[in-house]
Each structure stands twice: as structure tokens, then as C-alpha cells.
Image (cartoon, rainbow, N blue to C red; front, side, top):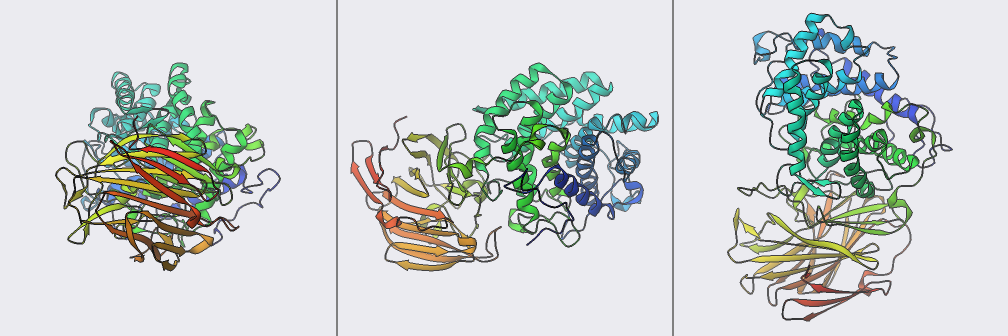
Length: 636
């Protein structure tokens, strides 16, 4: 569906891939800010957007979230225009700041009759998150907002923000919220010792989670997702930029450079970022680290590629119902989609996407705005990219621009007591055009005990690499049933990817012979299905199609509906293979493609497994007659 924004005509000379320029970004920002204005409360302190339910923090916190996250967008817009503010954005947010910080150390409820105060910042309380957005907004607009405030308001607002320096954050990316507040307060000369200490603590904490090659885990041992880009890289990079700190720029800029080399490969030719991890309603916040690399001058990307990726992401969502009939961002992916919404998310939560507009801080004559767009990595050539640090393998195909992420390293499980699988982390694969369905068993290998599939639980990465034009990634896990690991049972899994095709191999050890086993393929929306022997095919929307073909160990194939569909559509189906444990080795070929031309048939793929004392020697001949040999499990 065309987006509802009134924007300038496309410029296909400057932007041959998206048609969008800086003027389109400015127009989109103006639209988003105008749409929320009607929902501002007294004195513009709380912006309570309509929604079906509040977050678990309650309506007042949600109103603060509405203020803070849209203030970040307003600040980027005005700072990027060198203070030009024809609609009076900063005047309204300054009024809200004065009213919101009126009672900085009191926890308040809307029922108290005070309809403006933000209340206290507490240990692990949501206002700590929003304080960071307020602090960035004030830092970006200091000349035009903060420096013109009445001293009493400055004192009050500084005291409210300073609470974040003395409170305990959640032990993940939240450490960067007092860090960010500290950056502004140190610059403003407020509680400077505590501010500088918060900066040091935040950086020390994320350094513990650095995996190398530009990748972090987000607090939990293997929680790897978009928070790498829109938090763990973004906040240190933005602080280094605003502080003009050469040491921080060198340290965190080099990490960002390495990250962007991989991250840029996770965008579809249609603009979509990979659909994986939590807080996906932030959508085009995925563009934030792209712009951050340009701000720091620490990006491996050409200026035209940076803009092509960022504009592609923004346009992807605005063209696909991200805005409701009131012009507001919804909790979902395309339109609203409750299954991907976390309980901490309120109606204004999607406005974390404001960080995606960071490029407006770059002047209009910067090469990211003046250079012609150049193609994204997914549009240039077929590629497989192993990422050993997160335990991932990226597979992309130029004919359709589709990107697939094979997951052998991210599970979002805590270190102490495993929790139920989250399908946005635990699946064997994610992509830019499919989403998981919690009940359908898509992209999941499971033992079936009393008809119930086992969970994957914590994942142990076993490596990722290249074998010629074939990429591989492997992992092991101890399957769980009803929250309990099966004693003595392990599953070692391998993905091999070449062109548009994958081979998945699983070795089950320690389970009872005769146990039922099932593997799911990709969940495709708008699906039409067919099954022949051990080969299931599904054709979906927008030429998307998938296949699941038995290679070893399976006896039957089926397709099944995905109840409620996925984030990509209301109706979806998943192919499955079924078998029972004998030797413990299972192998599957699968394909997900939207290529316009016919491909060599998946059935042309051949597979052989020769037992060895420690596992199997595998030989795969792909449909294009390329051969791959692999020792499984991998030895290093």
C-alpha cells in the first residue's frame, strides 16, 4: 500500500534504488511529529498515544515515553536544520520539560490529579530509558533550548535527569541510559563526578559483553539481536561524536566499522532489515548504526550505499502500513502484530525508531546526501557470510535480494535458569521476508514427546566458515521437554548454504530409538501447498516460495497452517518432515526464494553421509553441480 505521507517527488537520478533524498527524510520526520501533536497533554509534558493496552509500567510512564522518544526526533530534526524550527517544536518540548520535572523525586500516578509530572527515576524503572532520549535531545539542541531555559527549570530538569546516575539499571543495554544521561550532565556541569562515573560504568559494562568482530551480546550470554546496532553501538558512537573524543572514536568507531561490514548484509533488496530478536516494532531504528558510522567517519560503506540502505529501510515500512489511519507508528512490523510485542512496550514505544533519523545530523552537502545511491550488498551478488562471533551465517541472493540468517548462536537464554524458547531468537533460521509462528514449528528441529515438540534452549556455537562458495555454521543444544533438559540427550546441528539453497543436518545422541522427530521449514504467508512423497512445496505472496526435501532419516512430508499467520501476513503455512530415531542422523534440503526466473530443481541436490569414528563425512552436490565435502560434527 502506498504510504500516506505528502512527500516531494522521487529523485531517481540521485537515488535510483529508493527515489528518496534528504527532503523525503525531513518530510517523514515532520509528518511523524505533526501526527503526535494532538495527543499531548497539559503543558506538553506527557504524550499519551492511543493504544489497546498500556505497558507494564503504566500510563504515566507511557506518556513520558511519548514525550521523550518524539523529543529525540524533534531534536534531530531541528539540530539537522541548524536551529531552524518554523513549527515551534522546541518551544513545546521546553514547556513539557519544565512541567514534567516539577516533582522530580516523587513516584506519581495519574490518579493523583497531577497530569504533567514525570515522577521519579527508580531502579530498573522505565523512566531511566526515557531519560536517555531526553538527554540526547537536550544535548543536540543545547544552543536553542537548554541554554535559553530559566535557571530554575535547568536546575529542576538537571535534578530529574541526575537521578538516573544513582539508580540501578537492568543488566543489559540499560547501562547505556545512565551513560547517556551522564554525557549531557557532564557537558552541562551538573553532578559531574557522578556523570563521569556513569560514563565509565556504562563503557566498562558493555566491554564485558563484546564478542569481537563488532558484535556484542546484550547482557545474557547469547542474546544477540538488533540491540547491537540501535543501542550497544549507537550510544557510545553518538557520545564520542558529540564529545569530539578521539580516543572513544577510535575504540568504538573501529568496532562499529567491523559491525557495519556484516550488518549491511542483513538488509533485503526491498529495504527490509532481518526479522529477528525483540523490540521489532522499532522498525527503521535499524538505520541508526548506518548513520552513526557516517557521523564518526568509521564506516566501510560508500556514502551512496549508506543512504540506499537507510532510505530503503524507512521506505520499506512506510510503504507497508507501519502508520495507522492517524499517522501514528503501530506496535508491529508492517501493521499491528501483537505476537512480537513485549510487555514493556506501550503505545509510544515504536518511536525508538526516531534514532533512525540520525542521518539528518549530517549536513545537506555531506556525501551521504549528495552521492548517487549505490546498491546494497544483497543486490550485488550471491553471498554467504560466516559470522563466528555471533554464531551466524548470512545467505543472500541477488536475483531476489532476499537475505536469510542461519542461527547457531543467539538464544536469549539467561545464564542461571533457562526460560521458554522465544521463536524470535531460537529458530534455526530467520529472514527478511518471513517471520516465526510460535505454534507452527517453523525452522525448528524437535523430538516429539507425547506429541509435544522439544525446545532448543541454550545454544552452544561450534563455529562458522566458508568452503569455497558454500558457507557453514554449526551448534549443539540439549533439547528440553516441559522446561527440563532430556538427560543425556544432545543434538548437533549444521547448516550448509549455497546459492538459494540450504542443507540442514542434525545428529541426535542419547535419545530413545523410535522417538518421533520433526523438522519445520520456512513459514510463508498467503500460502498454497503441495506434497509429493518426502518433498513439500509452498507458494506464497510476492512470488515467495519454499521447499523442504528429505535427504536422510525422514519418512514423510506434510504442510500445516500457521495459526494467526506471521508478522508478514494473516495467513501462512509451514512445511514439515517427519521421521523416527534410528541412526540419529537427519538431513534436509530447503529453499526460500522469490527469484523471478526458474531455478534448477531442488530435487537435483544429492547427499551422502559416510560414518566415521566421530561422526560422518558429508558430500553434497548442489543443483548447480557444485560439490561440498564436510566433516560433521566440525572438528574446530
